Length: 471
Ligand SMILES: *Cc1c(COP(=O)(O)O)cnc(C)c1O
Image 1: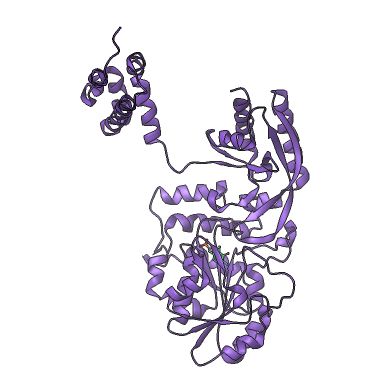
Image 2: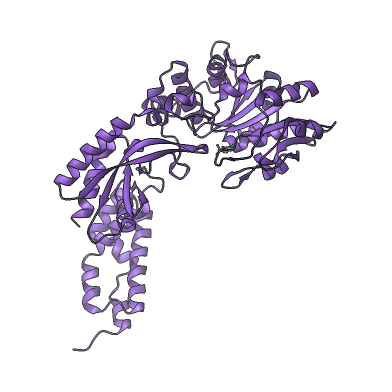
């Protein structure tokens, strides 16, 4: 029998129009629209053509492919029309994982978000006066209440897109054309492209470095002060620690120096905790109250790190400085929308009510190791009954999000092994699950740290593991 030439094979391919006239296409067009089905049909035909060209598709194979072309178009459509941004299960044990979207949000915050997002709101409308209002008010009062006893001044706050924007805006508003004094030990890179010297230069302020990498004294700052000095800046070393022969002035000393020379002190706190982290066993991590109590004039911090809210950057401090920041035209470019305000307001309300359990990131941080161990044991038992080798191991969870680089929380993980599958292969297979499960590979094992897994997701993990094992 003569084998079909490539030209014969190309001729057997239907045209896009022919495909679109077939019965299966009518159903798909009805459901997903003509444009999407046309795009998918074109992609499937193109793939077949490439396979013919490459010589991987002979006559019999092409016949089979054409028989199942409806399914191929449907699968292509599913890929084309699926969301790119997807929910994943975070089993890494890193609570504020920047690659996985940092802080998850609680039900109350999402209820308020839905309510505000689906209709009109008083975003910039004073309902009592029936006149234009300011969007700042929606979080201003809550934060002023939270900080009431911390600072010696009534604390004002404005909100921008993220903490990087907050730092840029504050430096530009308070120090453009002047000098900002920073310790050489605090010229940090946070990740991405946030580097203090670069942000400083974009803000139009001149960086005046003092001290050394490991030791900076208050006298170093004092000697650098001159008539062009606009700000003393403290930057939290969010993602590293300097240990050994080190020295750094206390915030109180910096504030006293600033007061003597009438120069404001700003602190880029990064991960702005609004609780005392000692209660979750993390020591040495400053919070926003500490900064304000020490007399810092402007503090900048993220909304989606230790605060546990939406992506945002908050600037809290002395009313006259915050007013200057608020009146900078850059503020208009960096401000946040009603969606962010609605979520932030809801999360801040939880702080005002001491309702920390409703903030998922805090709930995960506060979870007791024994409680996580019990969940891991139960999951392991279920998986083992279904034939997957599994063990509960002690591990450490990480806060992440540029907070407490040196401290971890005791936790327990489910450790899984499969015959014939390397840990990397198993982790990759779990990522193909729907929803994808992101695990940690450590010491040649796949670990699922349950601290960052919500109990509702446990069944999905069990099903995925059993599925991978029986493949
Ligand atoms: C995380 C961090 C930033 C950047 O904050 P984003 O909210 O990610 O923009 C800036 N400074 C410090 C000290 C940080 O820890």
